[in-house]
Structure formats: structure tokens, C-alpha cells
Image (cartoon, rainbow, N blue to C red; front, side, top):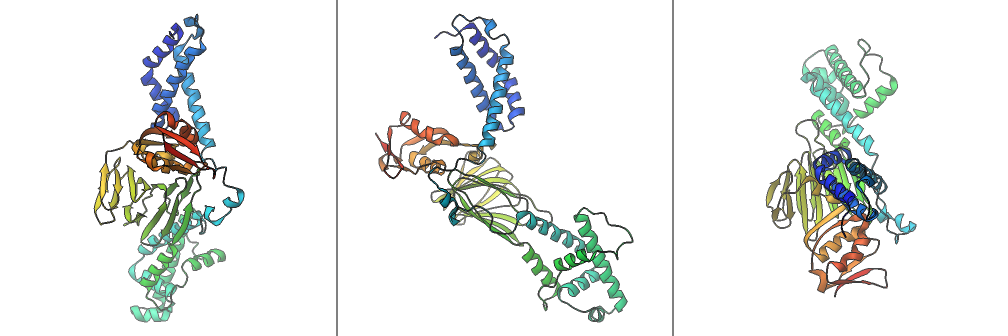
Length: 443
């Protein structure tokens, strides 16, 4: 079918203003990986305009091709943003009933105290720690011995060979220093000359925070034990098929858990640890204040991934683990002890050894976060197993079709539609089963 003058003008405008269109979409869409998709969709809309125009249409049918081009792009951006809002929490499979959603294995909430409270507690702990480190050595030692070990001031005076009044002064200095640090942490300006007017409630709260821990241990050991107990945090994260979870951790780190995934989080005073038991997760790790910060470690299938502050994805793929770094550097150790440091854009398959793959663009790392997956020369069985996390029905591949090589990009919100079209691209047929599952056989 011959294109009309108007359509030629539209497509010509697309080519003429392509660079400007990409800049416009970058400003409006934000995500780099979306820009070229939106530009492609814009071209498709313009090409579709050919069918809408009458064969006798003149250039006046669309008077301002450039304005039309950018209007189409704007509408596509708005459609994308609305769709993202609607699909932020993806489709709950229709074959999961309310009773199953309420079952223990499908509960997703943290099993520990509120994350914000835990984070606030840790920040208060850091504020007190810094305040104590700024004290003179004798004042700090006396304060901790008195608060943690319950040592009397008379005994402290004898230990340090000073008068009781000197010890009382040291204690007063330490109390006021810690109280001032806490007020600053709470955003309340300290008032000069008002050291004796600490409200009873605040004194009680501060006393609880610095309360007796392990009477009989030394001040240093008691302080360390209290810090370790205060820094502990643990929770279990899990998602349903077709659902995703965004979770902020007490240190400010962020975990995005893919559909049908399961992870356990455990923090202590020396390490932040996550065990990925199933599925995929993306981590934006916050670097902690102070030196040294606690290592953030992810364990999966015997592999170990360690960082201080970075952004990276981890995915369980059969017996192996896929690690992809978006930002920063990540240390990886294989099951057999082989070690490797990955930089931004690097991907690795970690099993008994570490195989590093070609670099990837930021938008291609943990692409499921953005609602799509790419399969490049992937066996059909592996691709279908990956897509099963988003499918309303169970998916199976027969042995004779399992090895067929797939090259495709799949929109996760349209997994069912993609499956219906699969026989057009591969020699397979779809056989619905009596139990409601779908079997993919070779033709």
C-alpha cells in the first residue's frame, strides 16, 4: 500500500527530529532503558496513522508533523506512567483464593519490630557511641563502669586514685555530653546552663538506653555486648507468584524482591546478611557511617556476595547464581572458594567456579524491576521456568521441546499473551491440562 504525502511527512519528521525526540523522552521518562522503547512505540503509532488517513489525504491532513510527533510521544509517556502505577504491585494469580493468601507461607510482612524503629534505635546508638569516644579517657571509663557494671563512685575514686568529687565531676560531664548528643540527634538545640533540667521521662529513657548490661563484665565488654544486642535485626521476606516486594532495611539499604522469591535477613553488630532461598532480588546497599562499616553479604546456593555500598542483582538459576552489578564493586566467592571482584556493568554466573559475562547496560540488570525480561539464546525450559513466576497457571515443557533455543523480549504483565504467540516462533504447540496447567510440546 502506497503511503500518502501526510504519512511520508510524519515519518520524515520522525527521522528529522529523532535526536530531539530521544532527549525529550529522556527528560519525561527518566529511565534510560525506556527511552528507545518509547521512541519505537512512537514510530509504530505514526506508521499506524497511514491506515487512518484517506488515500486522497493531503499534507493539510496533519498540518504540523513535528507537533503531532511530540504529542504522540507525550501520550505514550503518560500511558507508561499510568500503567506503572497500576502494575507496581503485579497481578495476583486468579487461582489463589483468599484462604491461601492468608496461609503462613504466603504472608509477606516482616516478622520483627518496625523497621523505622530499629533504624532510629541504631542511629541513637551511633550518636551515643560518638559522644562517648569524645570524652576524656577517665570520664568515659568511669561512666561505662558505673552504668554497665554497677561500680560505685567510691570504688571508682579508689581505682583511679582521685577524690570522690573528681569522679562526680567526671560522671556529670559524661552524662551531659551524652544527653547533648541525644538532643542533637533528636533535632533539639541544647540550652546552655540548663544541664540540670533534664525531664524525668527523658532521664528514664536515657537510663534505659544506657541501662545495666551484664553486671560483672568489664565496662568495655559490657558496652560491646550492649551494642551488639542493639544492632540485631532479622526478618523473612517472601512474595507470591506475580507479586513484587520493596523493603527498606534498618540501615537504609533497600531490597526489591522478585515474584515467587524468598529471602531471610539477619543483622548483627559486625555483619548485614541476606540468604536468598528462592528467586531473585535486587539490592541497593547503603554505606554505613563510621569506619569500618558492616559488610553486607548475600548467600545463595553456597555462593557468597559481599559489598559495603553498591547496587546489584542476585538470581538463583538452577544450581547456579547470577550476579549483575549496576553500580560500585562486588566481591564474589564460588562454592569451591574461587574469588572475583565484579565492577559496574559486569555479570557473572557463579557455581563451582565463576564465569564472567559481557558487560551490560544499567537498564538490563535485573530488568524484571522494570517489567520485562530478555532471553538471548536461552533453552526454552529455562525461559519458561523463569516466566512461571508471573503466570496464572503452572507451566511445563516436554523433554523434546526443552532444548529449543529462544530469543525474545517478554513483557511480564503480558506473559499469557506471549505464550499464546509462542507457536508462531518455535515449532511447539500448547496443550492445556486437566489440572489447569499448560504443557508446551514440540510439534
